[in-house]
Image 1 (cartoon, protein in one colour):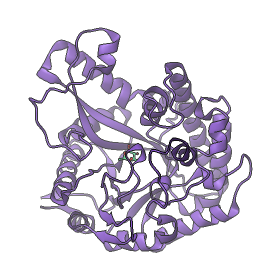
Image 2 (spheres, protein in one colour; image 1 turned 120 degrees about the horizontal axis):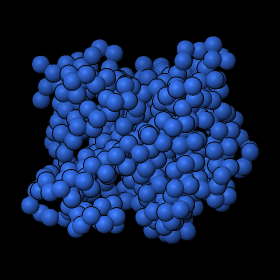
Image 3 (cartoon, helix red, strand yellow; image 1 turned 120 degrees about the vertical axis):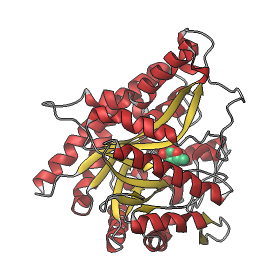
Image 4 (cartoon, helix red, strand yellow; image 1 turned 90 degrees about the horizontal axis):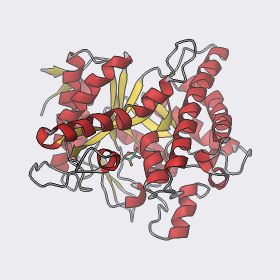
Length: 411
Ligand code: FCB
């Protein structure tokens, strides 16, 4: 029998911009208006409907829920903080608590206030200062009700999409800026880590648990050739662990600036490179069709066993791990349940091998605005009708609910 520990956190994740709607002061919003390609509009109207959504989560036996705070609501103009929006998030967190849903709160999930981006965003040397001022405002107000904090969501994805591939705002393609942004984000995390702990100490609260949410991916060498193996190894070290390592360098008095490791896992990359050149080593991907695996509706390979390898690798950090995101977009809800089942099975294997996993948050509770891909990908445990905003609980959600309720994984 596959049984998870009693105090395991079970739930789902969302992010403010993807579900709330009308985040008009965010850089993403302005980018959408400027480029005219996609519009997040009302998203899921979660800003108004959060109580209804949390009722669904509670009825699905979740005991935890990950949200993010929208910085651009809290600080719509530089230095002007909105107490009304702060109250909103306090209400949101209390609504979670009332339903016995442990909040996991993210401070930065891809979007920035438009004013911050105008000043150069995360490439600006003062970015950390701005982020800390916002973090202090939030953490002081919410600390009494929150134990788990994620400072920054998927720094590696943010850097690559916004500063290397140029597909997200500010659409830069500059390795120099990307390096600067990486350093600023790592520093911002380390400083925020310290700040959050300081606030809890000052308020005489139980020490919080603070981390990042690191996107990890399985890099699988195609045909096991030496050059593919070297490339897969290097990508794993750089992409999966690079930011964690960088953050670790900001330790003080040998104290790690992470209390646990939050990871987001979705897929694998099959690695097949032309040669040992830097370009090939870093970028070549295998589009060979020999190794067929199931895919999600965005074409990402589904590879649950990769999560086991990564969890085992994370053992070196000697920290608990929380799965802060794992999920599938698909029109086939049976495939969604299989995806959840298979990943949970491998998580359990890792736990039997001594990895301390403290929770699993499915991405996402709701279908939502999937960034540059718009509303098409359906990741939700709950289907959203974007005309009526009606919520419909999927069968996979009900199957997952049984696991959440009993801690037992059964088909
Ligand atoms: C992750 C993001 C999340 C969502 C999922 C599908 O990279 O953190 O916002 O877009 O992918």
